[in-house]
Amino acid sequence: MVKFLSEEWIDIGKKYIIEKLDPQKDLKSITTSLLGVVEHIPPDDITMNFYLELEDGNLKDFIVNTGDTFEEKKAAYEIRGNYGTYKSVLKGEMSLGIAVLKNRLKVKGSKMQALKLIKPLDGVIVSLQKITDEFE
Image 1 (cartoon, rainbow, N blue to C red):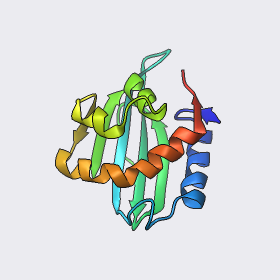
Image 2 (cartoon, rainbow, N blue to C red; image 1 turned 30 degrees about the horizontal axis):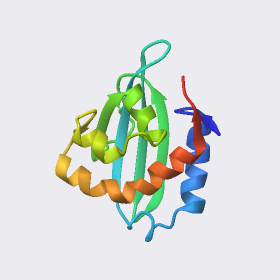
Image 3 (spheres, helix red, strand yellow; image 1 turned 90 degrees about the vertical axis):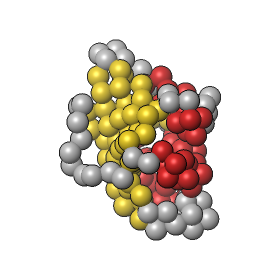
Image 4 (spheres, rainbow, N blue to C red; image 1 turned 180 degrees about the vertical axis):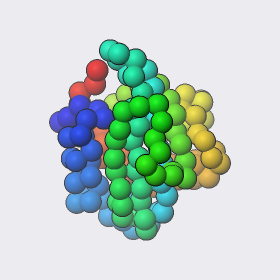
């Protein structure tokens, strides 16, 4: 188990997604990219980003960085929220869909299109729930 948003989290997440998730069955062969912006991370109130890209259900890229902006790649969707909301999603206390519908996670891009991607992305969320056990 690893700390949320650490390099180890990214590395183990990549390995898990590639080895344990079937591109067709689990990820519904989706092609999309998203930028998760995690704000107000304790103890220093910093912002971090993670970028996830899937092509035909296969993991193409998964990276994390620190800072208010992320300009390395252009994502189809940006999902912005505070650390507590992301923590609740990764602990299984709140679903990604509920977080978006209640505006606890704000979507930049088509909210309706983003909601259609949530079911296929559940596999990724579950995989990240399984490897994440340490938070600030």
